[in-house]
Length: 156
Image (tube, rainbow, N blue to C red; front, side, top):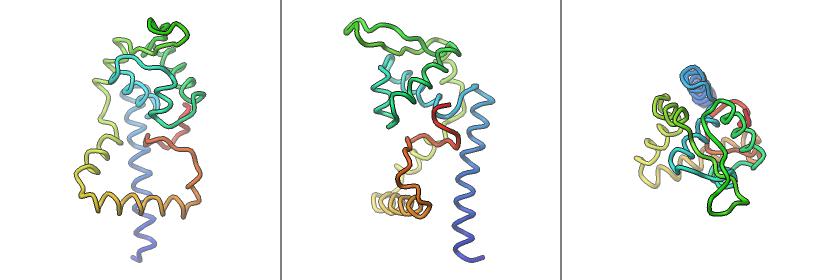
């Protein structure tokens, strides 16, 4: 097998792992990976604003609004007026949302982060450079992407 085929197989494995994780998460928690990441961020902070979540996930506020709307319909989060600044809305996690975070399968990106952080700095730099090169080869360097491993549209 030549290196071109090896590289395509590796890419396919990455895509497949992402797809399978998304399916497991949907079955276990009824959420997409992006929705779950929003829930995790709110659970970590106790309360957050849509703007802060959008900045942390590196997506637009419109995308976050869509994700928050879906989570609110599922009774995972609630919107409340900020007690500090009445012009702002805080997003807080419900008990149901907290339980979902507690019992969901280990997030794929968390597994990746754990393993990535175990690498030596030179290995991390080499891996980032290689992944950026692959993105450029696929003409994907200008695609807006957040650090959420999901094959679906992030707004869902």
